[in-house]
Image (cartoon, rainbow, N blue to C red; front, side, top):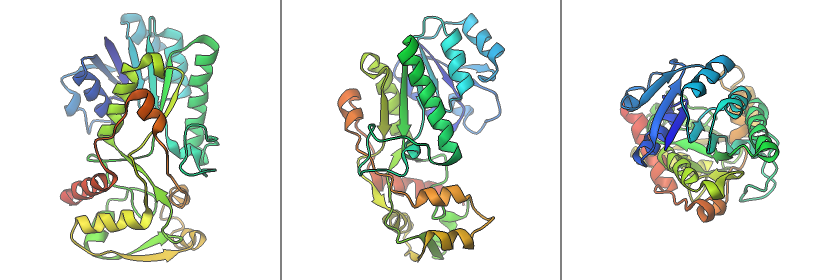
Length: 306
């Protein structure tokens, strides 16, 4: 079975590519060449240099090779339409979306039946590509599956910080026991997914194509924690205490005007808590990592860089 992974030199994409190769797929990694941080990790896999958003380049890719599976870690409308138009003999298409587009959740825990309004600009893009993929499935039988991960964590990227980003000095601030501003009362729920468990979910969806085609799956760890608890776990992992200073959302936005991504902070104030029963039942998804272990690992990894 041949698999093509778009974005396969990125953080998430390279983990998916390696997981598929370990599962027995003949994997080709396709990228524009702009992201090199994880290129060495997939150097043993077949490489293609191309822009998936360029229709001519996409047509050339599929004219030269047939792929049973196409995975896109950062899909666009152009790439989805191009795959649908040119991938001869395609058996399965999977792409990575986000649970963020569900915010604000109308019920807790959320599941795949919740409305997906698209929280702010970045999640509106997720909404558009998801609707296109599912629309093509319904209209033409395009064999699409959508994976919606929660906040992705694990080695390779800085952890989520207290301001809704992934700033480089976040862990250093914790180690220095600096007071951390926390939005509202710090009781907003967040539910991470370890990057390796996310990659495993893609493999399971590919294995279960008869079940998963035409479906959307939320992929998270088993349990959510409050923002307060997330920060407490991160600090205790590094053997320090944590000082939290709670501020109303609007007060924090005013304090950090021009210094942070406003959308990120507004999103951090939203509950992100999901039921993963559908993925467990239909795909056999069982996260190997616990929420606490994942938070601890990411904190240690980031601290080791300093």
